[in-house]
Amino acid sequence: MNCIIIDDEAAARAIVNQLCSKIPDLDVIEEFDNAIDAIKFLNQQDIDVVFLDIHMPGFSGVDFVQTLKNSPKIVMTTSDSDFAIASYEYEAIVDYLVKPITHERFEKCIQKVKSSSSPPSNSNPAEVPSTDTGEDLYINIDRRLIKLKLNEIMVIEAKGDYIDVKTEKKEYRVHTTLKKIKEKLPEKLFLQIHRSYIINFTKIIDIEDNSVLIEKNVIPISRSNRPELMRRLNLL
Amino acid sequence: MEDIPNLKYIKELSGEDTIFEQKFIQILKEEFPEEVQIYTECIKNEEAGLAGEIVHKLKHKFNILSMANAYEFAVNYEEELRVGDTNGDHKFRNILETIKNYLNTI
Image 1 (cartoon, one colour):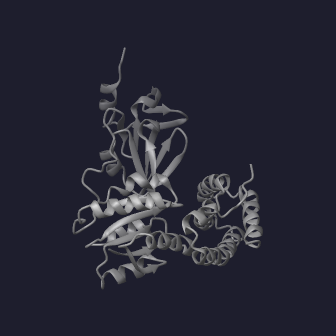
Image 2: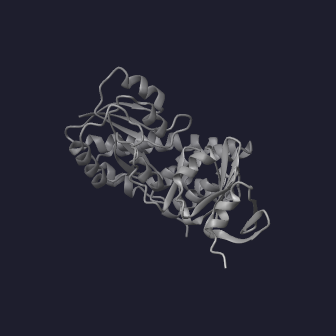
Image 3: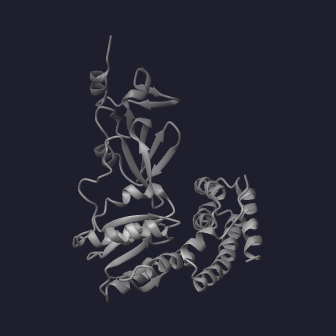
């Protein structure tokens, strides 16, 4: 097998190269400190495996995976373990390695690479991500996939091309639409009560006239959404 | 508790390959000060988000040098920088200084 290594950090490339050198039938053909140069290289040469750092400035590892049409097998390398599960949303990704990588873990990875079938001709996200447990939601912020617990989300507010997701602990601004996130939310927990607001139904403290109170947030209820809200209340 | 940097991971990785060890230490000695300089510039220019990017790279080096506590601190500090909070700068620079001094001894 032949491989390339993509990482903007020289020390990280040296580590993967050293680990590869201990595998008898694995040759490192080239190293790259950025994904763009690697894509140009892959357009000219067949490679079996790419060791790819997820977190690189400008053009990230995830951007790289999404760009490739005929992808080799990809092993993601990362300093953040929370990237790991999301990595499997792309079929070309065979494994992920959390830095600092040990010999034992690397050998397991190579076994996985050898036993995996060839990746499909494109590396689009799988239709049913294996991470969809119905309890969590991954949001993409600055090329990081952050896991939110659905039952901790209180309010989601539309802000132009963005949405603000308010949880019990923190607030996140995400580049997406209310319509798109609504499709990912379970109806039993969430309800759109205004064109700019989705609320977690279980977080309501009280309802007064045309607004609901969730923690310290007063959320308006639109006339058209009010009947559905009232229908779902357990009214005395 | 303050970590003491060491070469345990690098020695495990090298498997007595002293040429690799020396080459790797040389990479650390060259790359580390460059990243520290970028970090310093980012903080000076109040570019916390960019500082977070370089902290991400530096924290890997903390792991390489078996500095578990420093790594945990850097994970949190990276998150804080992403929202513009630079309060961890002083402690982070102390860690960088510890590594700088250590690299001068190897």
